[in-house]
Length: 320
Image (cartoon, rainbow, N blue to C red; front, side, top):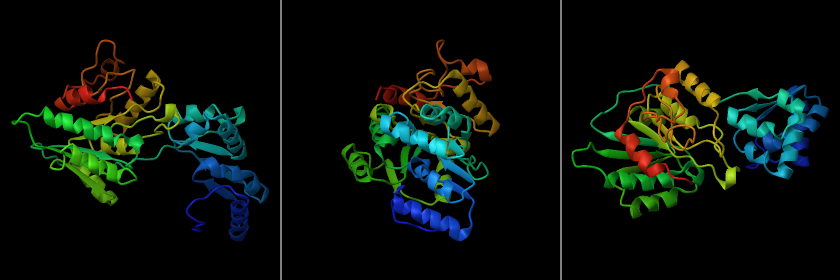
């Protein structure tokens, strides 16, 4: 591993260093961990002898496809690499718009995996309702919305209800703001911000939870979407009801919904829910309405109503 500073950009200096490394180690294959913008180095590396070049895309390439100048650069990246990978059908559709016909034909789907041998259901304390959220503390993840909702949930709690606990796992630039919100809303006794913790501890926290909630936002008029919520899938693999925001500014198709549900079934994931999905009920953990997307009939599974679902529907299902 060779580190070349904290920020790697496709500058002439970076290209020269990459070519030098290619020659030094006799490499013939190149993987760009972030296709945009590093994939712009592909022609230089191809000219230096690289035979196979793979560019991995994530979520941010979706906005590249929507901005004229960046769109042209993304097209060049697609033409320069043998393959571009995508993490979901949503990001694939967004990125494909910017690519040439040849670039679209060479796209590959490579979603991040969930290790179901580690992320699996654990023993749950049913005398306590425990909500967990995992993610980087940035505006896109919707932690502030979750804290405001938590205040409303506490206000509507009855004395006979089980104790409530909210665990926010992660770190990031909004941590100070979130800590201030916890104090301002009077949540210190029921909310814990763990900071960054080891993977094994994250798994343990999920296994002890009763629900996972992360109202992810699509920001900047659709330029900042969530490409694939790995934390939500890991929580679902632990057997948790999952409540997330709608991924992307446009609705998923019925085929996308069914494909995701079938994937969940194949991996033994019991519940996947959407709060803001326009084609489904506000919370799939509740019974589907007559004008819903029909997953009850399609899957044969009866989505039961839950107190969590009622509260989260009432307080989270609002437009951004």
